[in-house]
Image (cartoon, rainbow, N blue to C red; front, side):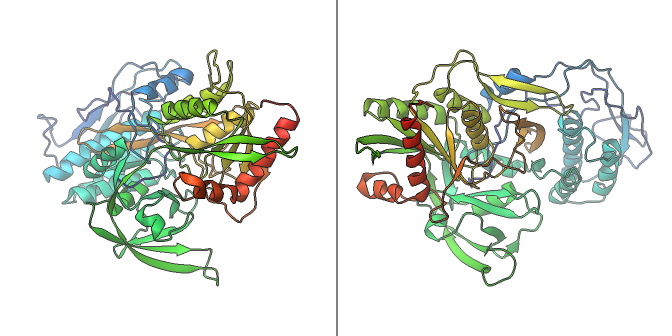
Length: 516
């Protein structure tokens, strides 16, 4: 599976409403009835009488908020590098009246389109109850269902029908709310064990432009060896333009059996000036294995001449094992006599939100606030630790850059706002939205933005990012590409301008007598 940009954790919802003329509904000012007559051939309503209807009439359900919302992530699984936040559902927890809604639509005679029509209603209902913007980008969401059903009716293929669902979702104005086909979802899940067959790219959709952007390359991967850079725009795969293609669909095109190849075209630089270029490269697909953590000990001489040890820990993604591996790494380094730490989150596109919070707890004490979530009704809920005990109180610097996104930003914000770490590097990506993912009845999957988050100090990160305390020079903005073994890797780390700045900040912390 080809990595994507996360802040997504995956949770398979156990209460997915299926297209059986009944969806769970909470009163949000919807119309009580909207119907019209259409030609009808329906396998769902034997007494169709020229009209197929979706009727919603269900009691309101209490929805998780705050800590319970994050706790629900524990049942999720990670789709490597695409992770998507896993919440069963996030709605207002205020009382609501049951509603009935009858929607008439033309039922396709093409079986595969008929199946996608059911998927459309299912997706529509989930968005109606959980999407972070209750105005649905200032449109009538009930009417949008009817319009999309009418557009889908004459189609002959499932692919074309899914295109209509994607078109409906695009009107929400949120590139992170999307649907992927059953085939794409299968591929998405295959990568959950961290073993990929692809070219080693982390990609994401740039929210403002809709362009597919390279966040980073897996170290030693075909993409890294070919010289693909962070920030490159992916414009073609095997000669096919990617206009309007989402990150998961693009990732699926990049994946494939090891030993095969794929040709990509990339745009580097801004505009069409002298600094802009187009690059086309043929990449072999390989089996790629990725551990979330790599580490080494950097010898460091303090201003007063003492030789100390700094533990360098690079966290590349928030996979299921990341927190456990982080604990083991810190225990090993403490046994080696490490006296300070550099946590490198550069080019970490995110992963499981809960794992990000678990990593934060490793470095913090007490009952600190880790993050604040804000639901669709504007209700804010803090996520707090419970009598935490840090594994180490040694000084800590966290490295971030433009490729640090979502769960990376949650972790960086938690450590910074609680006074535990100094941030060094460059402004982060700025993804402060949380997605849920639900497997639908036909095997497809729906990603829905269900909440946003604020840092412990109530800083809004979405489309803004986190500005570090200290910037480093532009000489080596990206994290080292070598594996961290042997003296050569330590030498490359010592030549990294951001790490040099980090070591200087650690010296300042020590001179002040702080344990951060």
